[in-house]
Length: 402
Image (tube, rainbow, N blue to C red):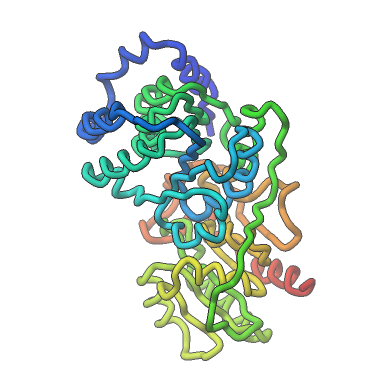
């Protein structure tokens, strides 16, 4: 996969090239951007009468990205010289139920990022909310991000100092990012694609603070709140994903569940998609040792279930990172779409309790634009190619050391 290193360097220079900024302003923006633009401008220049104070970090992440970022957050206080109580995370509504536990001592403001990118009324409301935070500094170190969401939020706060990482840019997003990057105080290059996110977070803070910060394995501090506990020992299976192609075939999970029952474990299926739950009900017999909780748990309950499990087997999706962060033994089925950016973790950061299983193919780094499957709703070949026997063997290796 060709990297965009040359594009990165050209774009960073836009920070100092205001003539180019004005030249690109009218061109290439999507119609939705022009619709939002007048309202965003209105909020951006709304007067603030209180003293600027503190730091805002914009993280429009899914659950997995949030987990990968969480430990880096604890360095911000020292790097920026701002107390934890004056640091605000602007994050996604999807992980708001667990913010009290995972972000204790920080201020957290969560939004529905999908509505923010579509509804002018909701967007304007959110813009006013973040504008009135009135931070002295606003930052975002997200590499894979959407300019009309993350970069707009950074810009609309109009802080005296704004720092962002250089993002992944393709032809469709080039003009948008060139525009927004030209408006910030500093752009930090965190590395070439496919640098892992854990390394990117460390690189960002190292460049800001001037002292080397080493990447580390995610560690989440979590106190269980589940009132009705599942009888142990049990193994969690997470067959879902936001994209059909990234799901290891459900029949493989069923075969795995049958195997775990045979060796004495209960099996708990988790996830959020109703269609998966219906198909799972059809495929499994009414075995009391199989517990189908797909679509039946909130986020805090999911954390509890994973935290108490003997093992979890998951696709490349949020719960896999949660499990690793909680210290649960974890098997992750990995595809090649952006291999190495999120999974697998760098070798020196992989715990003995974690395995990343994948089938290497020459077409890796396709960004999930796969042309090798015949049907839209089937797994990508790099995902389905992971063998059940290999998963069983990896599970046995971990379980025998528990």
